Amino acid sequence: MKTIRNFCVIAHIDHGKSTLSDRLLEITKTIAERDMQAQALDNMDLEREKGITIKSHAIQLNYIHKDGNAYTLNLIDTPGHVDFAYEVSRSIAACEGALLLVDATQGIQAQTISNLYMAINHNLEIIPILNKVDMEAAMIDEVSDQIIDLVGCKKTDIILASGKTGLGVPEILEAIVERIPAPKGDPAAPLQMLIFDSVFNSFRGIVVYFRIFNGTLKQNEKVKFVSTNKNYSADEIGVLQLKQVKKPVLSAGNVGYIITGIKDSKEVRVGDTITHADKPAEAIKGFEEVKPMVFAGIYPVDTDDYEDLKDSIAKLQLNDAALVFEAETSAALGFGFRCGFLGMLHLEIVQERLFREFKQEVITTVPNVSYFAYTTRGEKLNIQNPHELPDPNLLTKVEEPYIDAQIISRPEYIGNIISLCMEKRGRLVKQHYLTTQRVELQFEMPLAEIVFDFYDRLKSISQGYASFDYSPSVYRESDLVRLDIKINGDNVDALSALVHREKAESLGRKMCKKLKDLLPRQQFVIAIQAAIGAKIIARETISALRKDVTAKCYGGDISRKRKLLEKQKEGKKKMRQIGSVEIPQKAFLDVLKLDE
Image (cartoon, rainbow, N blue to C red):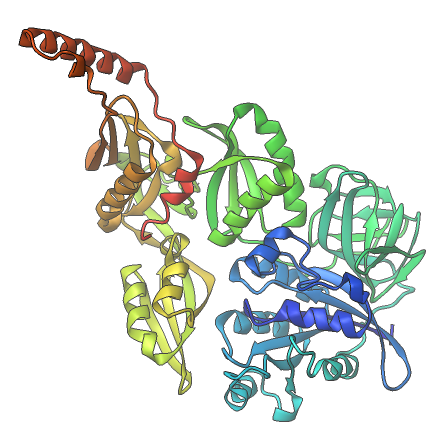
């Protein structure tokens, strides 16, 4: 155990974690030169296309220190976007140290701070690294001072590095060995293994990734999953290098994988403890459950695909523990699922992964957050879907969730940021200058206001300099109404939303306008309306496709034309009664991008 080091890399999005991880793999010769590619640990096409890390990735490096000893380094590369913070929290729970990476051209940003506090709460040893120091725009002294203020370290503790050129990488490896403590634990004690991730393999069943805190595990031993209380045989165990490498024995301090032939995704839970079946140990404490921030319905395009979609979401949940789902039905869309996500990017990624990995085309309803409704009968209802909201005459009050938002930006953008947050019903709590060029703003805001377009607008008004992070706060009473969208008089429940009364009219107008652009024209007139209860507050009309039927009636009596037009009118009327408006799948998500 003295030669094992478990550590993760934490940073804000786009600060160069994956590139630095590539250099660590290269220098320790974990990957042969011919197999090397950029973002080597990001094995999803989506990650490469978007240039972000979505999943945390564990890999074992072998490193020979200058003292001549060989060390085993277990690296977990983590995502930087706020929507994937749960991946980071699980990685931190499996480590003793963290590399805190800060971009020398951008300085400390919101997600850096939130991940750092998470690591400090778990008593991790922090190694501060200043990345991208080879760039012309690097502000080495200024950003070093920010790190010293934040972490409370000496200037000599900060390692200057460049993930691109490999500068400073040997010093990072030395610091990992010298500064990060070896894992504690007793190989002879009862077995305690923490599950921090899992994936589904169609041939082998579920592959579980774990960190051993105490005890020793041998191949073919009987193990027990504490939360389900079920026993299995450890058919194969091993460590995670670029490929899975089998091992006959793994003991305390190690990170590895286990295959037991489990096929049912319900039997594996992230944060669960695995122990020996004959000598069970207690469950490991302190692993927090995920709190979804955004809820949306996901429905199959074809209702016959419901069971396939159910299996696909369950398999995806194994690999993405932040995804929460339960079955629900909709009048317009049939059977589907109510899913909980950590944010809009998470929702987009899940939808994309369902299509790419499981060939599932889905319809996504308008995302919303969960509310508490209090009725005249004294009931307190948890509302996760606008249709669950009781009638106004049965309601006494509705409470919505608020968040504590933290925005770090340059001083010249403060005015724009404050006006955006005020528009979103936010209240400025604190304004604090971290340095002369960086200011931290703290707001209290309703969570519902940041669900749609807040993050995108914040980025554009601050030219990409503002960084944003938030944590859930309290529930407060609000004047909320249900906004319904009707097409030819029929409610489209996938587009219903709970909104503040003051904003209902402007949002209704925008949604109607957007739908007018998105819906294809038909042979009959289509009326698009926004309504609160029985009151229509906005309307747009899509005119019918026309054909000049009177073109052949030149000359002669006018009654011929009139007769033809009357016949045409009757046909249109009949068509409108039997015709239905198909809403294209793209429209459901595009409706939300109201400001484009």
